[in-house]
Image (tube, rainbow, N blue to C red; front, side, top):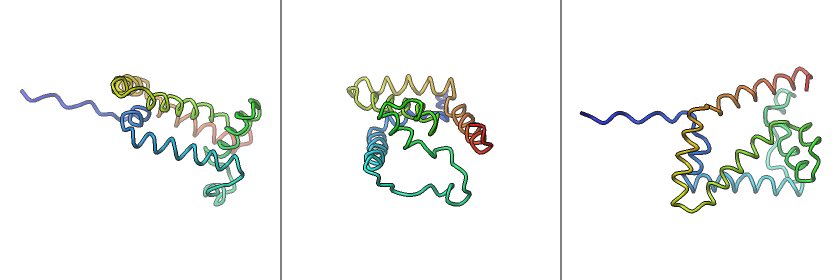
Amino acid sequence: MSPSPAKPRRWHLAAVLIADVRLGRLMLLGGCLCGLLSLFGISLFPCPWRAATGLPCPGCGMTRSALSLLRGDLAGSLRENALTWVILLFWLVVAIGLAVPAKYRTEMAERIGEWEQRTRWPLWFGILLVAYTLTRWAGIL
């Protein structure tokens, strides 16, 4: 008998970044660097979507939202981009996963991967992101 094929890992995001330490740390470091530069008013690049269409992209306002959150302005953070909190929670989980000792990291990545596969949260978050963006375009939010 041949071994059964491995289950596809279509919905793994946090699990991949925790399991692949170099990739996870590089992504986390890049985000922190962009955030730090934003604290000093340095923008690395303008939003190409907004420049082309005049409409906000799904990520527009996330940096301002995170900076508002750092200042303790919760209402301002939600006003800039309400989904920033989900992204920050995601990166907090990844940072914790990268900080745990290696012998526990593999188990954590597997458990998070199972949860991601079961819930398919990246799909649902993507749908929420599209809906949120459309309501921003319509002027509802």
